[in-house]
Each structure stands twice: as C-alpha cells, then as structure tokens.
Image (tube, rainbow, N blue to C red; front, side, top):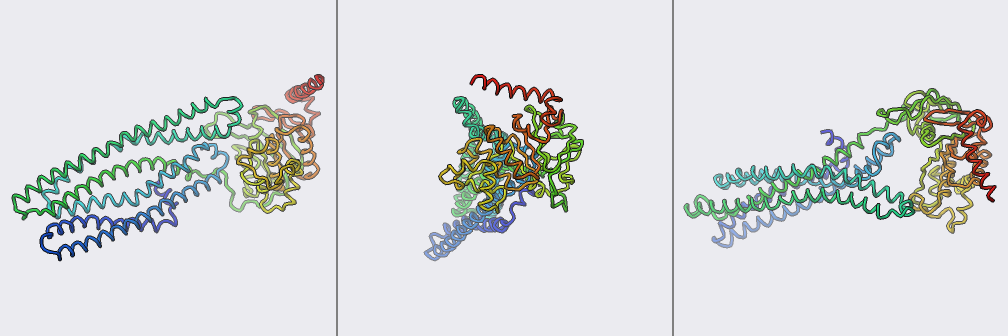
Amino acid sequence: MHLLKTLGKSVREYKRPSILAPIFIVVEVVMETVIPLIMSMLIDEFGNGINPILKFGGILLGMAVLSLISGMLAARFAATASTGLAANLRKDMYYSIQEFSFREIDKFSVSSLVTRMTTDVMNVQNAYQMIIRGAIRTPLMLIFSFAMAFSINATVAICYLVAVPIVGLALFLIAFKVMPYFRRSFRRYDAMNSTIQENVRAIRVVKSFVTEEYEKQKFSRHVEEVRNDFTKAEKILALNNPIMMFSIYTIIMIISAIGANMIVRSGGTRMTTGELTALIGYAGAILGSMMFLSMIMVMITMSVESAKRISEVLDTKTSIVSPENGVKEVKNGEIVFKNVNFRYSEKAERNALEGINLTIKSGETVGIIGGTGSSKSTLIQLIPRLYDVTEGTITVGGVDVRDYDIEVLRDAVSVVLQKNVLFEGTIAENIRWGNKNASDEEVRRVCELAHAAEFINEFPDKYLTHIEQGGSNVSGGQKQRLCIARALLKKPKILILDDSTSAVDTKTDALIRKALAEEIPDTTKIIIAQRIVSVEDADKILVMEGGRIVDMGTHEELLVSSPIYREVYESQTKGKEDEEDEK
C-alpha cells in the first residue's frame, strides 16, 4: 500500500486516462464474450434462409466494430497514462535529487540513480500499462467467459473448473521460480552502469595506462551476469507457451468429444453445433486469460522491485532544509566554528572533524594545508551547509548557518570544489551559472580576475566557444579558471577555493590571488592548497591533520612553531632549489 500511495502521487494529471482505459476495456471484454454466443446462433440458423444471416451478421459486425473502437481507445488511454506516469516519476525523482544534501547523495551511487530513473521507471511504466489494461481485462474475461459457458451448457463447462486450477498452479510456479532472477538482475544493472560511468569518466587514464583490454573484460563480466540472469528467467518463462497450448488443445479435445456425443445422442436437443463452437471459443479465451495473468504476475514482480527502488528515492527527504522564516540576509563574511564535531553518518566509527574552534574575520584570507584525508574539504563544506555539523555550531555573519534561508546562505558562499565541472554549452553560459542575469561586461570582468580571459580570447568564437560535457575540450587549468570566474560572478561574501588552482602554474596562481586580494578585499577568502606558495600570504594558515586543526598562524609563525608546516615548506623549497642548481 505504501508503494501504491507513493507512486500514485505521480499519476496527477493522468488520472482521467487511467480511469477511461479500464472503462473501455470493460466494453471491449463484454463484446468479445458475447460475440461467440451470437456466432453460435448464426451457425444454428445458417440453413434457415438469408434473413437470420443478415440479422446475426449485422449484430456481429456492429459488436466487432464496437469492440475494435473500445480496444483502440483503451490502448490509447493506457499508453497516455503509463507514459505520463513515467514522465512524472522521472521529474519527481530528479527534483528530489536536486534537494538532496551531500549526505543523501552519498547514500545512493550515481549509477544506481541512473538505473532507477531509466530501467526501473520503464519497468513501472510497462507494469502500469499492463495493470490498467491486462489486470482489468483478464479477470473480467475469465468471469464473463465462465458465465457465458455455464449459460450455454453447465455440464460441459465443468471441464473448465477442473482445468483452470491445474493450469493456474503451473503458471504460478513458473512466475514464482522466475522472480529471484529478475530481482537479482537490478543489482547487476547497477554494477554494469557503474562500470560504464567509471570508464567513460576516466577514459584518459584508461588509455594512458593501456588498460582497455582489462576494462573490456570487466565490462564483459557484468554483461554476462545480466545475460545469464535473463537467460535463466526466459528459459523458465518459455514453459508458459507449451503448457498453455497443451492445456488448450486438451480441453478442446475433451469438450469436442463430450459435446459431439451430446449432439449425436440427443439429436441436437441438449446441445447444438453452434453452442459447441462457442464453448470451444470460451475455452481458448479462459486459458488464454490464464496465460496472460501469469505474464502480468511476472511483470508486476519486476515492477515491485523497481517500485521499491523508486520509492526509496522519493521517500528520502533531505536532512538539510531551510527553517521557517529563515534569515534572508548575510551581513558579512565572518565565520566562527565553535566546538564543531562532524561525522558522515551515524554508523561511522569516528568523527571526520573533531574539536574545531576557529574564528575568521570578514575580509580575511585564510589558507588551509594538510595531508590527504585530513578533512580539509569536509571543513569548508560545512559552511554553506552542504553537510550539517554533528555537534557544535557554525555562524556566518553572526548567525547560525542553520537559521539562514538555505538559498540565501549558499548565494553568499561561492565554493569552487576540488572536482568542479563545466556543463555542456558555451563559455558564457557556463560562467552565468553564477548569475544568470549577468551582463556580458560582468562576465568578461570575472574572467579577467580569474585570468581566464587570456585563453578565452584565443578561441575563434571567444565567449561563445562550445564546452563539451564535463569540460572535456579544455585543459585542467582552463577548467579551474572558468570555475573560479563562475564563482566570482555571484559576488559572494565568502569565496572558498578547494585546491582550485592545482592545475595552473605558480605564476598564474599568484596573479589570481593578487587579483582577488585587490578586487574583492571585503570578501572572506579561504584557500585550500597543497603548495605552500599558494597560502603563504594569507592572514592566517590552518594546518590540519586527522580531522583536527593542529597548528594555526601566519607563514612566519608556523615556520617556527609548526613541525608539520616547516617540513612541507622545506620539502617544497628544497625541490625548487635542486631544480635551480641543475639549471
């Protein structure tokens, strides 16, 4: 019921076709079950002149046309309803994902979300169409066919009551046996999509290490696993048809034998030839409905697994929401961490950040260095509430970040993440992600500040140059500078550069920092870097290790007081001295 309620919310404007489809199906089924009865009357009256033929023939023609029109309308409305449901499900899932915090994004893998929005939605779409057509049609066809058969001859119709449970049990066992293979196939799909995504994203690494054959073998294993599951399932499902055909022909033979015996012995008083023909037709309709019912069971089984996966996304609510009547203005870029602890999940064994106490004045430039895994990126992601603190408080402009309207807060904090990406479109369109209403002059200005204008002007189309998906047609350094320009266009109170100049040379890095210091002096700037030279001019520098701030001070102070900072500095400057000596 929970699945039906959750998915039912996405029907919305497609309720009307969802109701009309079953109505026309009822009309179609009534016509199809009455037609054999009228046909039997025609057969019995065949030798009594032209009038009965014209009469019953006209009735049959009218009923056939009505059945055809009803069937076409039912199919049309069912297709409209099912495709509409699929479209709404994809929209609802996509909108839900847009609201997720990083914590919820971490819960689902990207490949799994892609599978849920494609394969799983398609399964639910097919099942919905099957339900509003087949799940209505099949029971009605069984009931009406039984009723018509018993109205013709109850003695012969009893054969159906014996055959149907036997056939039903066989088809149920087939559906039950095939269910686990379909359930397992969805996990296989996730793994296969993950491999595809990983390979395409890292294609340059694959080629540089000449591991194409290894990647092919890995992908082939996933494909074979999916193929094996579906092959096993299809082999079992293949038993449906022979069992049904055997049952149909057996019932027809039994009915024909009993019916013919009745006709001969009674001289046509207990049963007529037309009635026998109708009973044979109803036998096919009943057993055919049973076969279709088994297919519906398999389809619904597949869709239930898909529905659960879709419902899981729709039911997952973001842990980070705007408070009612949230603060609508960020006064300045002052940041205060007070007794902050953070862990990524409740199941995590230890905190990713622990005991963070830090005050950053508005307009200050703060550098952060530390080894891999020291939680530098985690620290800055708490400021715009990409994650929420587990314990303690963070204030921006004197207000707890959890008290801000979340859009207002994030508009005031520009983050150039370590793995920032560009989107398919022109350079100007990518830059305007920071402010869709920005003028051409504003776009050019921020590109100059990020020292991106120099390479943009070298392109034939300049700011109208097309960027491929993910920024694959620009270098790493160019991509970073474009991302910095995009962040600057927001005119933020706080600018965070998370190792965002790692792909540019030290000269360009210095020019970018100089431009930022001169052009946006009132903006608080936080720079995470691996190179000491990128942070040595900062007002204060944080040294992080194991999720803690172990040292803090200016460049000169840390050279004296921090063994970690001094070691990093000496290793980097020694490397430069060795290069100069070689020259």
